Length: 442
Image (tube, rainbow, N blue to C red; front, side, top):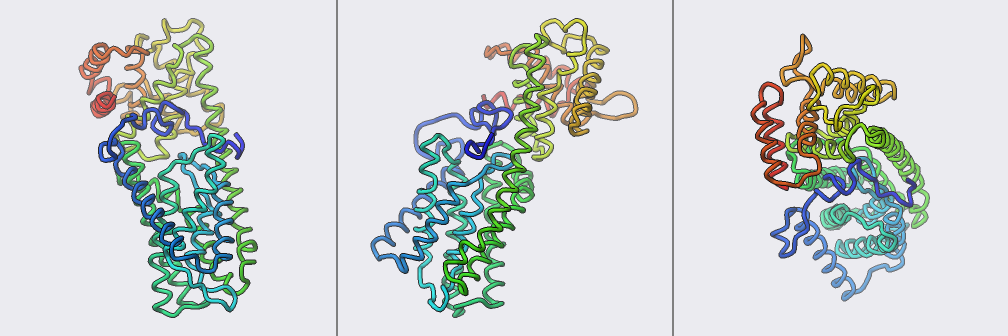
């Protein structure tokens, strides 16, 4: 997938939490009745404040319109070149750095910058809209909560820094200005991570503490690059004028290219896993869609149990390929349902699948999850209990083997009760109850 189609596809696109269809159900009515109220409040609040800033600035007039136009073009171009990173996180490094530098701009050469915080918000909001319009026209609509977060971060920086700059009489590069800018960038980055964690926890139905840790780890590299570049551009422009915009955006463009290539490597890795997971279906070893359904259900159960992001992705890969060991069988299991196979046959399939995965060079943890997926909750021998991922796959696989594509509520309830009867011996009780919670949400 090229950058022109940079909308990163999740292994369960259109069917899993990151893919969207299970993310939430479409509903009509007031925003407070939406299943994702935090997202609605964020988008509504940022949208209202941006509109108010545009109206106010248009009515009172733009200060230094040439400078505003230059930053507007930079931000719009950066928004047009946004990329999608690991976990479907949309970022626009150049746009965010440009917006940060405009919020921090003290002067251009000998001319002090006199624009207000609300002009910063107006320029950034308008530029973001202009940059996104061509992408929307070709079907690459942004995630509105990510756009709102980018505008909100600039809004917080502008509203906090510009009055302080006037009060402290900052008019050029100084230690005080650099320290203040760095401190505000750090504080706003932490606030943005908190907001992003709230949205992630709401979207995936996972624990806030887990989502916060995931967001801080995932956003630190880009946040550090964007914040440092924004401060550098603002300070450089006080000496070089608008030429500093072009000169000091170059390092950020290199960093953006590196982030994009990293995302492409991960995308290729996922596509390989998806292709491998379909081999058993194409060969007639399992029902069509079985691996994807088990993967999707495992993902939802793991979110319910509060699994961290890295564990979630390893679980996705293991769940998608949990039946790949059947390729080594002389005779396929009847209907592909391993839940009906003997324990010895189940272990053989799991071990063969683990061996195949190890040969592909994938993560050892993925192969280990597949190898131990058939074990009872207490495990076999001296190895102890199997990993949580293996216990999740065991429950999800058994449920799909017994239910399949059936949407019959009675059948689903009967299968769930059957799993509950074996909870504590064959199946992990916590995993079974997490499955019940997922099913109750539809």
